[in-house]
Every structure is written in structure tokens, then in C-alpha cells.
Image (cartoon, rainbow, N blue to C red; front, side):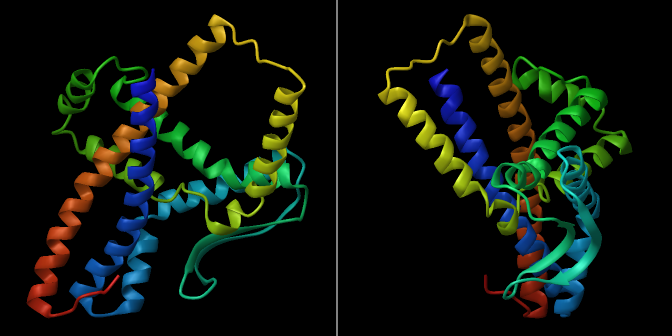
Length: 244
């Protein structure tokens, strides 16, 4: 169990790193090829479009489910703070920190569920027991163009599902409130009663998350190597390089 927790955090960290790295270097590769910074940003938007659509749809659906009114939905390039660009946005009315946190985290949760469902329906990998089973499940259909389409969707969704800075704004309040409540409960002598069924459920959720994060890291890591080589090659030929 302890090893699985360590693996979970390692994969989670790698997933966050790859998301940022890919977004930067997709633009860098496009710039090395075209020499046009505007084209680089548009290329990133078009490549990630399925993930952007799912990201904003998640905000919109969850907001309406929990009774928060939504306004304009925007899909496309838009200026944000500093040098950062928005690939999409949903206008949401001001509410309490809890509901704002749920709306903000929605793309991440929906993205994980989407990748898991894609692996399950596409490759019958709902709960693989080992790495060999995963390799066999995907490897047996590697010549099928739909397999490559599925892996592209994994990339597009996972590279777009991390909550933005604005999505994370109310999290500090919620974390502080729950930490205070938990600390007070422990001081007053309350101890959680964790049943074997709850432990088993937690184990299944952890295993599933490790599987999903592992798929994302392998797919995005492989793509990162390819993009690095292409960016280096085109940058050498054209003398157009981006300093990150």
C-alpha cells in the first residue's frame, strides 16, 4: 500500500510536469517550423480542441448541477493575465468557496473518468492487474487506426484537464476549513472508524488512479520525446529556437 501511494504521487507529479511541458513545446515546435508565434498558439488550440471542449463542458455541467448560474461559454483563443492565453472559458456567477471548488476541479475529475472509460470501452482495460495485461490489450490493436485515435484523445484530454489558476483560487479556503475541522475533531478525541469495506474501496480507487495516471504518463511521455527530437531538428535547421 505504501509503495502504491508513492507511485501515485510520482505519476501525479510526472503528469503535471508533462502537461506544462507539452503545451510549451508544441508551440516551440510549431514556431521552429513556421517562424510564426501566432501560428504556434493556434496550433496548440487546434491540437488540444477535444480536451478544451471537455474541460469547459465539465465546468458548465457541474455548475448547473449544483445550482450555480452560468453565462457565456467561449471556445477559442483569448488573452489572459500576462503572457498566458485562454483556450476557452465559462462565465460562472459568484457563489460560495465549496461550490466554486467543485466547479474548478470538475475538468480534472471528468478527464480522469474519460481516460478510464476510453481504456475500458476501447481496450477492455477496466481494472488491469499488471503492466503486461495493459501492453497486451493495447498492443494487440496497435495496427488499428482507431487505437491511435484513442491515444490521441488520451493526450488531448489529459493535457487540458488540469485546473487553471483561476479554477484553483477557492481551494485554499476549502483546504483550510477542512484542515481546521479535522484538527479540532482530533483534539476533541474523535478517531475515524475505517471499515474493511471502506479500505477495500479506497484500494480500488487508488489502483484505478495509478492505472489512469500511468497511461497518461506513458502516452504523453512518448509524445514528449518525439516533440523534443523534432523541435531540436527543425530548430537546428531553421535556427529558430524558443527559450523557455
